[in-house]
Length: 283
Image (tube, rainbow, N blue to C red; front, side, top):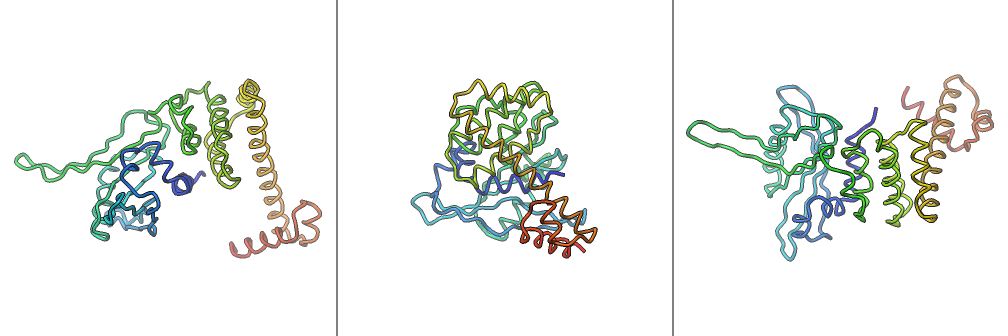
């Protein structure tokens, strides 16, 4: 299963300013970009259900030219939930109690369906009294058009286009456009791999789509074609490495020696020993 929360947290924490630039320019214009500090992950217990909930991302930032700080809480929601707005208010209340700072709450709705607008307000009212009206900023990806982000020189755009409103026949082209945009950004290899891996996770193509994807790439400029193919090649190498590791794990379970597994799989002795240690921990 895809760990959606982990993928989104890794993406947004790595490219936090770029995320704000893309979706919340009115917020990023107010802050000192060098002041961003990610706070420890908060875990809350829902006493009604007994479940533990972890917030996704909490950053403390300082207003530009001031010593005053506020918090930005970003939550990724990968499935629709009837009482989600109420849960966001609970997060807000507990964080406000703990830190005693203003909080700017943001939700990224990343599910594919439903397409209807998600509620972004929680109210407590009586006929004679409006007790509470809590709102949060909402970014609902399946209601955004990927075409609007084609020319955004932003790594978050390159990643999140893969989760926007995409018609089935458009999937190969969107994947190619994500990689075309990524290739123009000149990121370091680790960040390049983070974005490309995100795109490949959410836009897995079948054989027919893969042909359409290759055809789309062939219409691009030569330099872009070469850079995109380098990314695609790295996916293949990563998949092959994962396959070798899975074979090695199976052989370790069967009791084969480290030396023999090195010969069979082509992994290094150190890699096999790391897998052996992993297996020991699991048992």
